[in-house]
Length: 222
Length: 180
Image (spheres, rainbow over the protein chains, first blue to last red):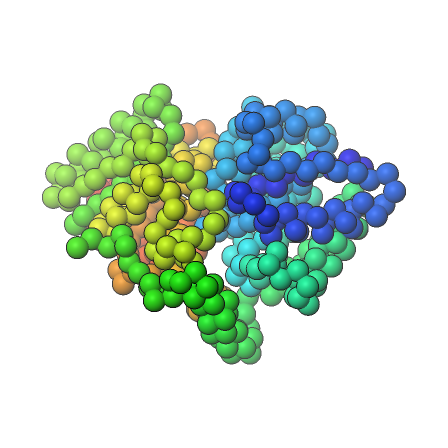
């Protein structure tokens, strides 16, 4: 199987989406004969170039970070330009990968419904959406046990896709957990976010010499 | 009440959308609202590149020196903001989506747990109530409208009030705004 991957991260440099895509492909390419080509959406000459690549592809993965609870605007623009292909993608299988910082999968569930709907509009086969929260800082902490667990999980999803041509619903459900915080986990998460605020975000603000301005309100009218 | 309409129609040739917005503005002014319309297609709006500068390097301030800060200042001044967009491929326009993303400086990077999920802490004490106005073209269907509304309801810094479509007359939408 030859898989076409679009990385829709708007970031200019390395991104968590890129790391996740590489993890997925590491599993996918374990099956002999499988290959891939990856395109960074914001490095293509135009959206039309992406459309031409999609027209020439049968198996497609569109990966991106969650921005304001849906796809980044650049990914939405790509979807808008796909309008002429509505009902004409019967030969295509399309899957999605969405990663973000919040831990809970529920933040991406409305988007998941949208992605399934778009695939239906195109008359493509919807493979599913890989949803993973808790991904902030993955690229900065490559050797942490959390990063390894996230990457091993997506590699497994890629491996099974490489073998069967389908996303395993069981693996997707397992991988996206937690859906929300339970009564018990809320207590743990409250402690976790306090630590994250102080030692992750707070430390970055201190490193940048702007900790005192953390709560600045520059757009407030006088 | 100070009302801000963010007109996310990307195509000037979509005249029915523009006509509707003009009629709505007349109704709102007739009802005494201080109404501002920002026609986003006429503004310079870069897309968020996820650099987190607005959180970590220049807190509260976006690195882009375009019309984004003007939009955010108007947003914070308003009592009510109407996000208006045609439905294109089942969702709001990428133009309006760009503005939604550029609202990132309005929250802090810091997190808290609200009910069963994480959220970002608000940067400002007060935010406007918001609502959606979608067109009723052939791309409209209830499932799309519900998905869009759910996305807008997800943000903790906004008080989401309603979704109306252009199937509702401008008087009806103005009435809903009067009732706030």
